[in-house]
Structure formats: structure tokens, C-alpha cells
Length: 254
Image (cartoon, rainbow, N blue to C red; front, side, top):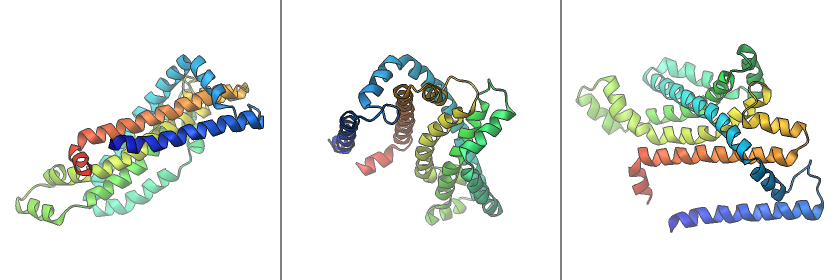
């Protein structure tokens, strides 16, 4: 019943917020172009379910590829930085610069560098955005090594790679998945926002801008709901992978 206690409160709060939203729009006679009612958004979501599904698949593919590339680069960079002290002093400011890059400035530049029919710019934007949280969290985990384990591996005359594989990486897994949880939602946001600036018109971002341009605001909100659901799928998938990779943490928490 523990999961019920964890899930039920946010579900009740969400339902109450939607009911309050519906009443505010209907009783306050708020224009749809300012704020559509949840019922109107739901009707559009049902009517456009096939388009929302196809757009979510297109955006999800870009987000997934970008997340995988950014995660791989972040973990490898963290392993290299944890091994060589001078590299740490250089890589952390560089990663902070990447984190400070705004999507609205980065996406148009990358779109101009590639063909308009290419999905590479959106995947690059996603990889750059997710790199920082994964790199920082992984680096922190790789640094926090139990001194007893370190002395034991030195006693066995273990090589640097053996030490990293047997001690550093397993010990850093909680930090790696903390970064992945943060990056999973960021990947969807980056992929959707990058679609606002041209390129293929198949993703959620382009459908949102197109619907808003034709003042079909309930439809635009329906695609926004699709983006929210896509981000939730990415986040829950990361949680499942964390449970599979570290079952002992689940037993300890329980």
C-alpha cells in the first residue's frame, strides 16, 4: 500500500487543479485564445490522437537519441575528469558554458548548419542540454569513493581500469541515475523547443506552433499535453531502469 500513499495525493491534487481550471474558464468566461478549458483540450486530444501519437514518436526519437548521446559523452567525460585532475579544472567550466547556452539561440544556428530535412540539429541540441546534469552528477559519484575500498584495491595492485570498473562505476550509479532523471525531462523539452525553429514539421513543437498560428489554441494545448505525457514516459522509464540496475537500493528503501 506504500505506492498508494505516494501516488494518491498528487493524483488528487491534479484532479482538483483540473476541476478548478474548468470552473474558472467556464464561470469566468475566459476566451479560448487566452486559456482553453480542459474539456476543450480533451476533445481536441481525442480528435487529434493519431496526429499527437505520430508527433510524439518523432519528438521522442530525437529526444531519445540526443539523451543517449549526451549521456554517453557525459559519463565518459566524467570518467576522464575523475582520473586526471587538470582535466577536471578545465572540463567543469566548459560544461557550465554548455549548460548556459540557450536553446533559442543554439537551435537556429544548428539548423542553418544542416539541411532543413535533417533531424541532426534537434538531436545535437538535446545532447548538449542533457550533457551537464549527467556529467556533474557522475563526476561527483566517481569522486566519492570509500577510502577502505580504495586501499583494498591498491592492496590487490588493481589497475586504473579495474578500479574504475569494480569500484568507481558501481559506487557512482546512484549519482548517474540522478543525472539521468534530471536529463530525461530536459531531453523532451529540448527536442520539442528545438522544433520551433524550422526543420521537419513532424514533431510536437512544430505542431504546437502551427496550431497556435491558426488560432487553434485547444489543439495547440492538446499537443502540449502530448509533450507532457512524453516527458512523463521518459522519466518513468528512467526510474524503471534505475530499479533494474540497482535492485539493492529498492530493498534498502523498502
